[in-house]
Image 1 (spheres, helix red, strand yellow):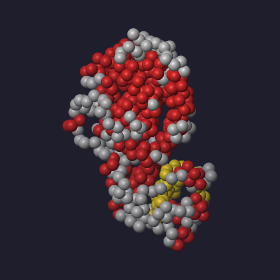
Image 2 (tube, one colour):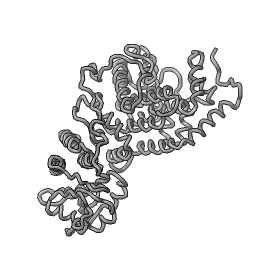
Image 3 (cartoon, helix red, strand yellow):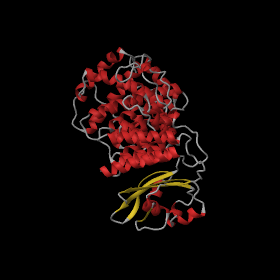
Image 4 (cartoon, helix red, strand yellow):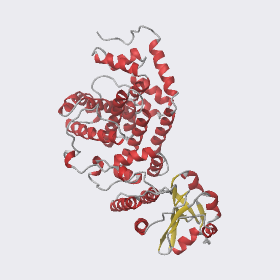
Length: 516
């Protein structure tokens, strides 16, 4: 006999359980930060500034997130068409696509908040389902008929957040709800209504409201009517359908295997097929690709996949993985072996990878000059272990050189102050541009160097102890320069092979600027 939501041993128990759990969650120090971070990532898309640069800045500001994105970018799933290792976030965005990196970053932020909780198996399983749903949501966004449809991947990611939260913060309650479900006499909503005081979806909505997640995402978590769904005319209704479908398909992938997936997904096709314009072939193809990508994403975040069914894995083209070259582990090139200055020991390999990335971007007809500049800047920054880097270009209206892009420590504040007059002067910056020479200063405290530093640089970057200046000059006309520094001396210097690669990077950019 099904348990009805209205039957309670204690009329106030469900409400108190829900409210107590919400208070506990809201007191968790890292969750408000999660809400702020995810809201910021969502807002990047609608920013009037360059969204690619803003997303790259956001990822680079978090060392752990940077490493996870690079690991994901270097899995077999993404590298079969490229081959070369991905060592920069700029290249990862270009290779995987802006929306893929954005959704992956949000998934990684979510996982980092919950994966180390107690009761790891339950939390891990619900997290993997959320990740899997986000991948389905992104697949649906790519074929969707509404603008800015990539928000569907975000909605799908959070569709399961109620379960994640309950499993993380009240595991005994989560276990009781699951036990009630396993009897087969009650639905998930009935069980959660009785024991939690509301559905998992409603509980997730309440938590997301506290985190100030955009309303469009929260509203997409609302339940849908039963039965076969019809095609809708509004984006909000479509988001609700996609979020619900994504979570349901993720549940199938989590519990089935091989041919069983197709069989278990058939009811979903009947319910969502017409509404989302899906047929059996599309669904079968999606099942294979989403399962594979879920494994790769979980692997990049160190989440064990023991809860998912096992079997012979194949790549997206149906080739058994054991026949493919091994995954490139970004840890092999993005490791912690550094000189005392912070410069990576494998700087040459990183610079070479950057040159290859720039070459591939130049070969694409779709590349943008700003993206290429950001890629070169990030390559210099990460390969040489700088703490701050900027590209400064001449502003014709103000007749000044102004920092157009910057990354690294306090980059926003320093970018605003990194500007100087266009009128030639006897300082290092103008001397480098007038003479078109690359300067690599290993010890900026030497009196001769100090005497050539302009006042604005001493005020803005008083602790700069080693830096480079790479002028951008075309046909004897200075266009600007690259600048990057550290707060410590670089006694190891820059050997000839690294210098040659740095000059190659600059030459590649100048060639692109001439083409543009």
